[in-house]
Image (tube, rainbow, N blue to C red; front, side):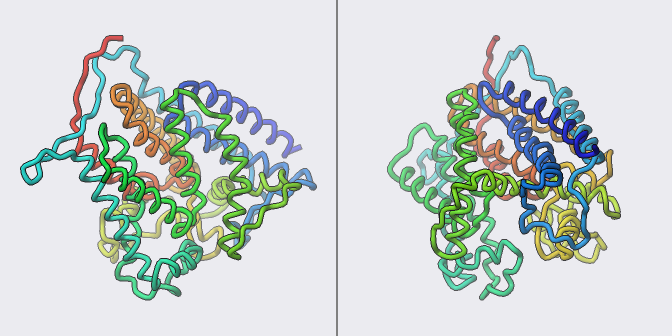
Length: 448
């Protein structure tokens, strides 16, 4: 009876949230709608599948290799988690309401490329920055891969590095830090495509940047999230450009991913492409959805286990290794980050990384109040960003691709709930610097 009631409650909220998302994306996706889409999958659909997994014995929904029952949980769903999910939804809408959509705009912002005078000639700031970022990315791949003895060796041990066992394979750690600059290739491509005119050098750099991005996403980083994010950037760009939601395209992409991801995993493991059994498509679909399951499990860990509140220390600790040297925080007696606490509940160790997700992240920090604060801040911030970018692309559609890149960060935020992954990333920092320093912000009168 317990599972039946909880299943019905989750199902009702799932239908309501899905209807809201569909109605809100008629003219294209934005930051909030993307956040709600992945939030609905992680915190509504996944618990429903957990309940089915518990009650319908012929349905095998794997927890995957993510959860080792070191501390153990009897189930991965509860009324407490459902109530926290409702609290989060209420406060994120409250935060959105606090930043209302302007009905009448007397002025709209738009951006222009700032000219730079170099060697007595006028140059495009965006062009110069794009060239610099692309070349820096190429140089970083060379230096980073040499830490393992070459690019082939770096690709071979990519899975071990992602699992936190890099110490066994590094020949030298001198240039390991250059890994954070490798994603600049994609940012360089985006900036080149915002230019009004592109010469042969720009097109060559775009080609180079695309090749580097594909190499890193499918080879060096070998991350499911990186692969999904890369494709989603393009889909959301088309959505904004054509003012369509492309829901069908997203569903087709997800179905393709059901076979693409295992195909890539088999290649990485054995060097051969092995197609999954088509006859077990339903199970393959569930296996793919297990990619999103750790956030719901993290929420149950946060509810079940005893720990000291973090008091949003992650917003400070996340600066370590990003904007502040990690050595600066040594000797201050500062506890480990939320991600290490959550990881310990999964593995019984802190050597790997399992982010808590946005709801558990709030609960780890300050209980129910932390969940409400995290939701309210998310709603207000994302609504403000949506208004800002929509004003910009209304007069300069070329920035749609950049906006799409920022939109995908909503995916990262709901999955991790940690500012260092979503807001403190090196690419986001560069985007902010480029927009502040390299672009001219103007106001244009417009009566609506």
